[in-house]
Image 1 (cartoon, rainbow, N blue to C red):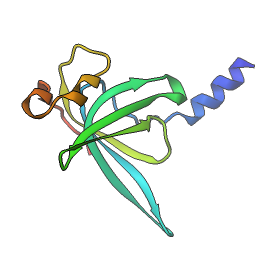
Image 2 (cartoon, helix red, strand yellow; image 1 turned 60 degrees about the vertical axis):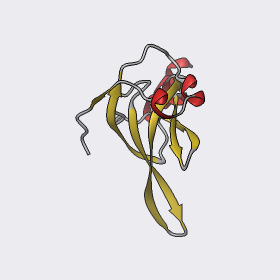
Image 3 (cartoon, one colour; image 1 turned 120 degrees about the vertical axis):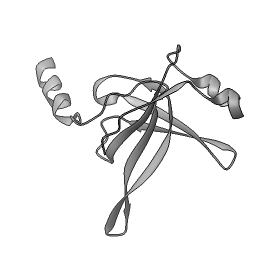
Length: 119
């Protein structure tokens, strides 16, 4: 029975997910449906958490908009995510970057290296 379950979950996984990790600067393009039209809306920020595995894997992206911190949780293998673009990699020593919620300004920066993004 577990082989059937593994086949079903393997079929639902997205094959074109780029390699990204905690602390990376990413831009997530989400498909938005408005009436009978669809468009892509970008949400960019720093990946502060990843959890789960397989079809249940999620990641949390955080950015500051107009002085207010905004976080969104995205399923990695969602059909509503059209693409994920990695803009920069950061050197971090933590598995979760929840401490960035309490930081503002220069103390909220991470040491980054620019990624070679493929669009």
